[in-house]
Image 1 (cartoon, chains in turn cyan, purple):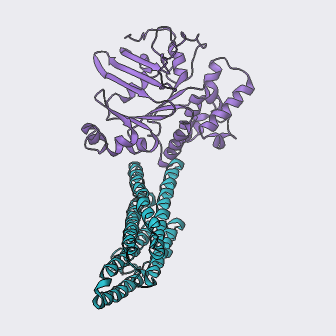
Image 2 (cartoon, helix red, strand yellow):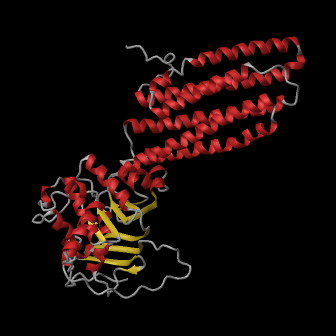
Length: 223
Length: 290
């Protein structure tokens, strides 16, 4: 069914374009924060529109493809593509949140060197990149190993939360900056969650197993 | 406008090829008006009404068939879709007591004009049927060239070239190139259907009409026919009647929904199958009736 395969290939290509835009947005937002670069932060906000439009385009393509009554893996691919596009749209929104907060933060002197936030960003983006790589290569195992790493990002987020809380208690003048940094850390934690979702979708696509909500990355126990 | 003259002497047989000498061309078409779009529609159908005796089978149908695209005709049994298809190449004239009114233009030419030979129309507008019908007494190659030979083409090199070309276009060449002399009926069902497509293509039509071409075939053969149709539309205009809506969704660009002889909705295929405007269309495509 060559014509259908061509359409599926186009759908995948649009999804990967969306993924690269979303990853680039997060990277730029963190760079805008670290470099205190307001222009870059503003560009992230503007470029979010392209990511949103891709979600609309992909969902529209997907529903047209569903009308052709695909089955088995083709059917799963289309529903998975719709879900991944939603996760990527949310990643784009989180990047915009980070950019907005970075604009707020650059109004005040930098509180401390940024170490943990770039580290969280690197972890979350690696997770997302590897989940998408598994989608492209058809490797469910590669997707499964992404999932447990979500815990590490959660741990870092809580650690940063505690550290910022003690800053705020000691000096009220830091409250505004700490809150903004907490929001940024939360956004990165959410991005890691979305990467986990993508990984779960990839496992569903290639193994036809729904591993959501069933314990991190392991197949559900036999009944 | 004018009723078809079904008692005309030089009627062609039910399948594509002409059985008489090629007739003189009809009157030259009027030059298109200055504001006409660059590419004319393959068919412009206006106020088409078809009657079988007193039975009003098609009621005031108007639509435009785009060139080099696939237009699907869907609707429940008895809705008039096959009658509609056959009016596009004057096939209904072979049915006793059939009468049509209205205007049908093939690339701006009125195919029902008095000077037009229906045989010529049927060469320009080929047809493929639900049950494949290769001529049983002929070989594969002879089936392909029958239309050409009946039109007086004798040169072996031309016939051989056109045989290969048509069989390639019908995605059948590789499977039959070593048995062109074999009886056509020795081919599988799916192959016979592609042979009928090759036969229609051999006389170089502009339009291919297909009446449920894959409904008698297994899924693999059906997939081959569908791939073939999508490939053919690069060169040909295709109108296909199908009761398989997912097939229409897969291969067509435009879809017309008929019900009880009326055209209910006509739109881009994706629109018809994802968000039809008319409730009857929605009820039909979701299987609520028909």
